[in-house]
Image (cartoon, rainbow over all chains, first blue to last red; front, top):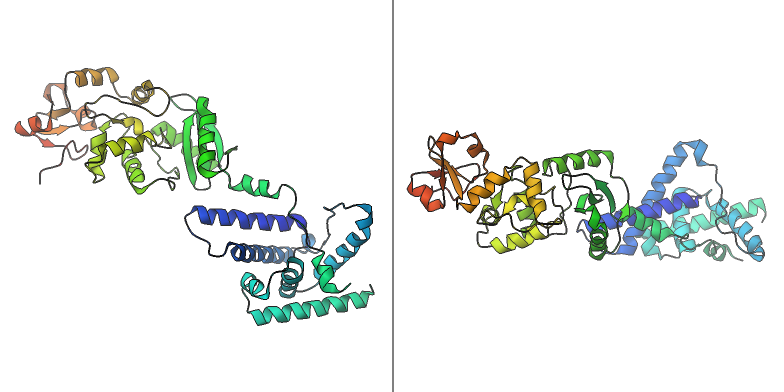
Amino acid sequence: MLGDPAAAEDAVQEAFVRAHRHLSRGASIDKPGAWLWTVTANLCRNEWRRRSRKPTAALDIEVADTTSGPEEAAVTTLANEYLAQLVLQLGWHRRAAVVLRHVVGLSYAEIAAALERPVGTVKADVHRGLQQLRNLIEEKGT
Amino acid sequence: MNIEKRLGSLRTEAPEGFADRVLARVAHRFTTVDSPLGPLVVVFGDRGVVSIGLEEERDRVLDDMERRVGARPMPGDPPQLMQRRLARAIADGRPGDLDVDLSSLTEFQRAVLEKTAEIPAGQVRPYGWIAREIGRPGAVRAVGTALASNPVPVVIPCHRVVRADGAFGEYSLGETANKQRLLAHEGLDVEAYEDRRTRGVRFSGSRTTKIFCLPTCHHTKRTKPENLTEFGSVGGAERAGYRPCRTCRPAVLAS
């Protein structure tokens, strides 16, 4: 969602830390999974906005090679990196919906809760996002 | 391969050490601070100080925290503001503006500790006084238990609470003598105190004002020695026509 594994980890870390603070204050969390996704998605969106405002740091998108896989996987890794670059070209709402649906594998209801948008809108975002990805791939001829 | 499947292959596991890094951020941390009793280990979290013990008993303090919250505190410096407030709280023997996290205690324990924090430096109050002040006059023994498990001694001055007969009693921070050591450091004349106690004196009064106090009340300190008188019981003082002091409240004020 951010195109930056370190920033992504920061966001998830922060979500867990907030959950811990929330719980240790004696408050309860009804659906911990959904709660974490909502907080993480919001943190990612904030971070994305922050980066977009500072273009120097922002669009220097690199898919870091944290996973130095075995040789035979190198081709897949390359294709994956390329795909990840394309995903980053989607607008925030479509990207978040596509990633949560097809990378993470959440249900539409879960995605709607995490992104705080109606289910119908989320479905449309996923659909249009995928269409846009297909177009991008065709354009560039994969 | 269709695009949905390819997207699915972008999914990765959490990076190595992720859980540890989260834990490092939520775990309590500990630092060492000087005190009149020598170095203390102070455990703190986001919401303030949670535990204080003698540095020489650090392992026991950390074991205890690990049992209570499931994670062992890690070494770390408190934020500067907390550091300043902590040093002052330990020097003054009261929390002041230092955040102390008592959220894991019962309401009764908190009430006992908050009342204890009101006792001025160099003065002492009996366990029964705390019980009465928090509206639980029968809970003297429970007050003793609550103070024995005071998680933040020195900062919450449980060393200023003594037995009904004036004896210093037990202290949770190292040896019993540490209680007197702290009080002496705060300006209590331990020798004079012990002398009064062994003579059976429980209250002191002023002949000019006809008010009686607990012997360590600061009003007693201001009374001229020639005007000072002593009592062994509340009854004795009241029969002599003295009324209890409004500051140290040695007995319930007759309305």
